[in-house]
Image (cartoon, rainbow, N blue to C red):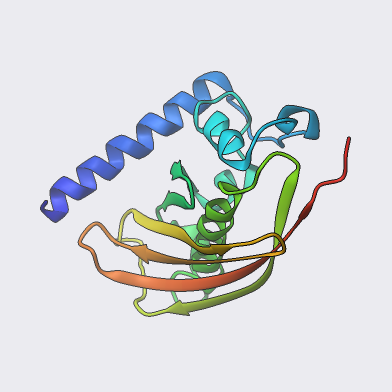
Length: 181
């Protein structure tokens, strides 16, 4: 597939998800314990993508969003904006880190059974190519490497529609029982 075809596909997928989410849940918010009760992490994220649960505020702040999930996988897409630039005019490292952390965490979240949660214990980010305002959409592809009873590890990478790597990361997450409501 050509870069132009990939970009067109990404744009269509992102817009379709965004429209579906905003049609049913037009405002950012939080998933309450009652809304998540009895649902696996994958089911919570699927409900969010369907607009049945609110999307998180960070999506508006950082101009990115969840595009798709599958067991052990999560895909986010974002486009660097003027507000994401550092004083030297490059995309701030925090934007890359937040996009990667979201893909990593949601990939882990897809493997959480009802009543289990996680938190990031370690995040390691490597930026290998600078993005600019002209870069356009980038995707963060997160995938779980191991998910156990107490720890989960995952890796993610940010790529452009041309397949070029912009950044990659790994995480270790602590896995635990959620407090009962």
